[in-house]
Length: 242
Image 1 (cartoon, rainbow, N blue to C red):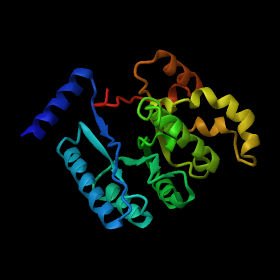
Image 2 (image 1 turned 90 degrees about the vertical axis):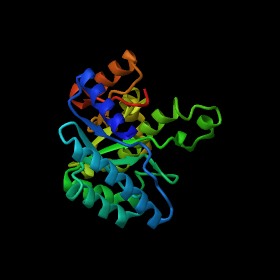
Image 3 (image 1 turned 135 degrees about the horizontal axis):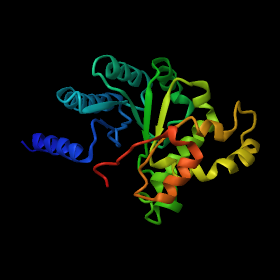
Image 4 (image 1 turned 45 degrees about the vertical axis):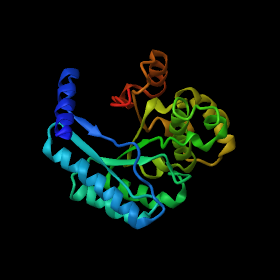
């Protein structure tokens, strides 16, 4: 079948590139207002990815998707993903039905991930940070994604999520967008804008891990490397987007 050929082809490409193992990170989990429909859709996808990982356990792993914005259902699916499906982390879109996943209503999700010492990989939702200044000018994909990456980090800084939930390993794609260039400005002006935080914004930002997807930009990679350090840069491919 075509699906089997696709997997064989994927493994051949991994071999050619010297990639021992891939973690599958679907970037568009279906976030649906109707809880029943959302749970059914997420179950179907998580089962499919887990089945693929189980067929190739030495080569492929998967993250668990959550039926957000439904908190109790998401906690149940997280447990199923880790305890039954063997998922190695959680994936969440940065924007869920118009809300940042930094919103306080998602707090129970972070508390449970912290309890489990989980990995969280986040990905832009293609919202262009819901800005006409991005979307009406056709920059939703080329620029809006990096803006979402940055907004996620900024919202986590504002709510001190990494400080309050230190057991979560956060992975942000695309080198964090413009975050590496903003650390000094955040420290100097961000403290004034959002006072009484437990730590400087740059301290929080350096607790995340950032993947290397930057469309081959040496300048972007070098900036992130200097800002975050080599121990907080992780390999990312954005395959098959690139």
